[in-house]
Image (cartoon, rainbow, N blue to C red):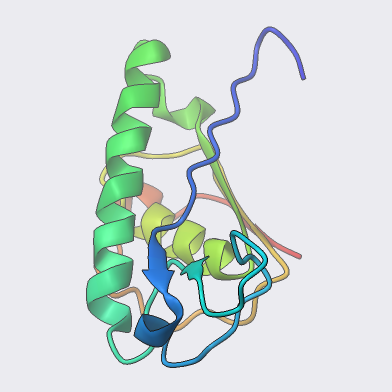
Length: 128
């Protein structure tokens, strides 16, 4: 990249396949199909699991902002698929203005479960 950019790539929480109600994801962690899988949300508990993940990302944003001397506008959230939904949920509800949100290979996101914060009402969102 460059000396002017940092990339922080948090991994989603790990659940046992039974906790995901049999949903098999492409991002399994080993060769066994009955093993543990990464997922930002659990079916049937979307709001609680996404809320926990959003708060976890808010903490990461705060840590990065300290490295940027409080310049939140230099922080961009990027997510792919489930991560795209999480990036949008995290960004629109965050209480300080971010640089932007990029959602890759996502489908239309639903309601902002943690609400929309005025700080990011005009934050650009690029969906691909």
